[in-house]
Image (cartoon, rainbow, N blue to C red):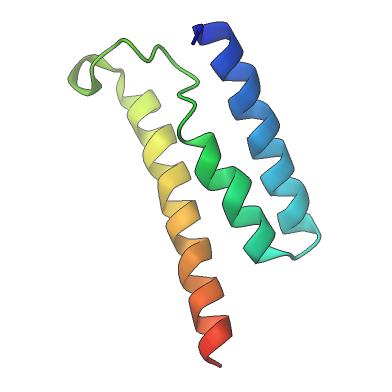
Length: 79
């Protein structure tokens, strides 16, 4: 897939996830935010070791947010 298309798909999915978070629907926010990680907004052909630190941090923070939402949803189901 072309890099320019993945940037737009990533952006749309992140915006959709943020919209669901604003509505306080954590379960529905997890899905587009998690799927957005599959569409690398940066150069997907560049290896992880060759990426700038800010790109690595952006993706890792995004992943941490998704994991945080998963844990929040799990603990809400257990309570």
